Length: 285
Image (cartoon, rainbow, N blue to C red; front, side):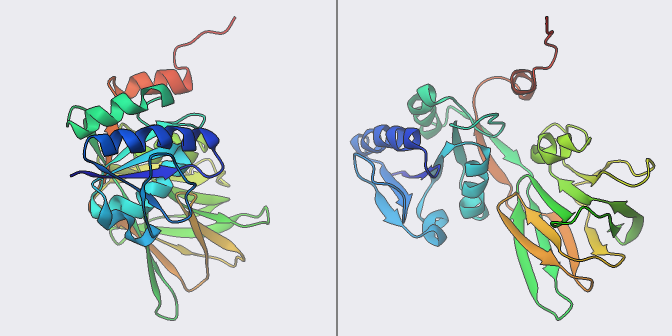
C-alpha cells in the first residue's frame, strides 16, 4: 500500500474539491489518503495525523496550492526524503507540477513511477546564539537576512569556508538555492540558476555601493553571516515560512542539507517553465 498525504492550501475551496476527487480514487486502488489535523473534511475520507508525524507516515505528498503551500509541505516532509507532487492553485507556480485539471493523471503517473523526479538542493541554516543556544531550519528557496520595520541599511560580514567575502552595507542579504533563484533573488537582481547546478547564490538587497554584486558559490561551501555594525530588529526569514530576530552576538551558518528535496516534475524542460512563467522571448504590441 502506498500512503499518500494531501496538503491543502488554507482557505481554498478548490483544494477541498480536488482532494475530494483524489481520496476516493486512492482508496479504490488500495492506497491510503492522509491529511493533517485541522484540514477541512473531504469526501471519500482520509486518515488524520499531526503535522509533526506527517513525514513519517507517507510515501508521497500531494500539495494542492501554490509555491508557498509547497514550501510548507517541504518543511513538513523533506527531511524524510518524501517526494512532493504540486498541483498549482496559485499564481506563478514555479515548483508545482501540473494544473488542477491534470491532478489525477499526474498522481497516477507518479504512483506508477512514470513521472520525472528531480533532486533539488536544500540549505541547512544553523543559528548560533550568543548565549550558546542553537536553532536549525531548512530552506528549499532561500534564507533572507533583512532589516525589520525600519528602512535602514545594515552591515553584514560574510565568510565563505572561513575566508572573508566582504562587508555588505545593504537592506539585507539573500542566500538562495537554484530553486529559489527565481524568487526573491531574481527580484533583487540575482541570476537565474538551473536547478541541476550544485550552487548557492548570495545576493545583497539594494547594496550601498555598486561593487557589491551577487556571488555564486559551490553547494559544498559553508557560508557564515553575522552583524558587523549596530542594528536593531534584524530578521532572518527561511523560505518565507519561519522567522527569528538576529542579534549582534548571533552567527548564521548556511550549508548544504541532506537529503535534497525530491520534486515531481511534469514533462517539458525547465526553460519551458521559464518561458511560460516569465514570458521570455515574448513581444508586446
